[in-house]
Image 1 (cartoon, rainbow, N blue to C red):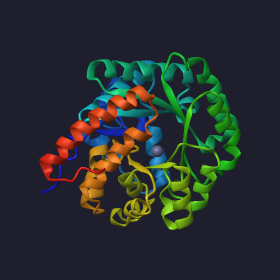
Image 2 (image 1 turned 180 degrees about the horizontal axis):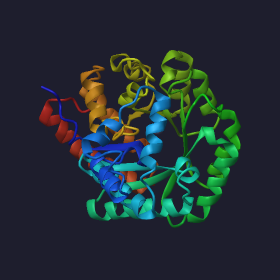
Image 3 (image 1 turned 45 degrees about the vertical axis):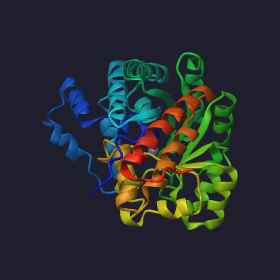
Image 4 (image 1 turned 90 degrees about the vertical axis):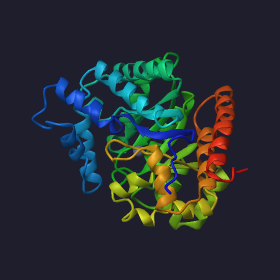
Length: 346
Ligand SMILES: [Zn+2]
């Protein structure tokens, strides 16, 4: 019998707003902007989200962003993304707002879209009781100076919007990470936590470079599994990986889901959380990531409950919220385990 992970309390710590808009919500935007010629039905939106490799994925990503034309669109999208998490018993999430394509090609203003997305997230918090934070991200391909400009844009918003972290996404092969050291230093000085996409499709060296930026977490980092010394370093530095198996298969970062290195990383004791990255575009969800880890990769349920708990320990939140959410997690997860005859992890 497949195990239902939807009711297990979870976090979502690696989630791009633009790639997480449920297809039904994106179709609303398609209609609003009169672009049914590109996607006449929801099914067509679904089919748009099929790609061959990482480069193609970035193209489709741009297409999605092209529907976020106004502050209202961002607010609507953020609210709908949050609602999709509530349905999966996600208690805490960090939603990443990209300040790359949306600014360069969409002509948006950073402060405007950050404020708008925050309004959507706040509405979801109030209505559904989920705890939400926002990350801001730029892409490596836009360079260090561009990232510093975006940090300048958002600095005045820090007291107003709960921006918890700076992240860097984008194409790994375009720009090596060492040039972003001043960017990460600046973000740290602004009081932001740090995470960075690295070692997804490139090599363990990229993860070593990421560690030099001083992040609390690393997005993906799955190439670490090829390097035992690096896995040991992640343990020593206590840096957690945000692992997103289905995304890795969709972008071709791993050839077959069954070959995903998640079990190897767990065996080496590397701290990690499970996330879904761009769930709408990858036809996944954070619940599905747990199912895949169990059914395809053979990770036992007790270990997965421990991974879920790890999310609450690694999330960028204050101590009071963490205590409250961990208490709730312990209560609900113990009941979840008892119902399924799963040993509750120590
Ligand atoms: Zn990502």
